[in-house]
Length: 164
Image 1 (cartoon, rainbow, N blue to C red):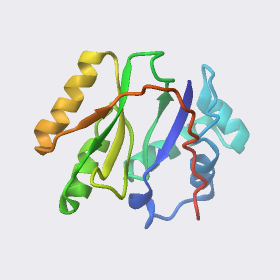
Image 2: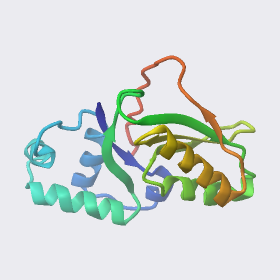
Image 3: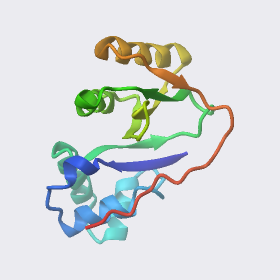
Image 4: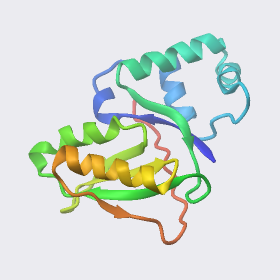
C-alpha cells in the first residue's frame, strides 16, 4: 500500500503556495508515513505542528489545489479496481473530468491524446460497486465507459515533482 497526495495541476496553476504547502505537495506524494499518526510524523519532518499540517492540507483541498489524501492499494489486494477510458468530445472534456474527479472512488484521471481522451482509475469495495460507479458515470454523461481491468501487474511511479 502507498499513500498519495494528489495535486490538481490545472486548478493550482494560478494559486500562490506557501513554503509549507509546496513541501507538503512535493515531499509526500510518495512515502506518506504509514503510522497511527502520519500527520504528526509529517509535522516533525517539516518542523511544524501536527495541527498546522492538518490545517494546511484542509486549506489546499478547499482551494482545489489538492484532490485527496488517501491510500492507494495494490490492485487485487483489497476490493476491486480498474483503469477506465472514455471518448469525450473535447468541448465537454473539462466538465466530464470534473465529474469523474469528484467521485470518491476515482484515484486520479488524466487526459490523453487519443480518441479515448479521458483515462481514470476507479477503486471500490467490491466488483458490484465498481460496476455501479462506471455505470453511473456513463449514465450521467451519456458517454460509454470502457473498463480496462488489469491483466498483468506493472509498477508505475505516479509521483511528480512540481515546478514552482
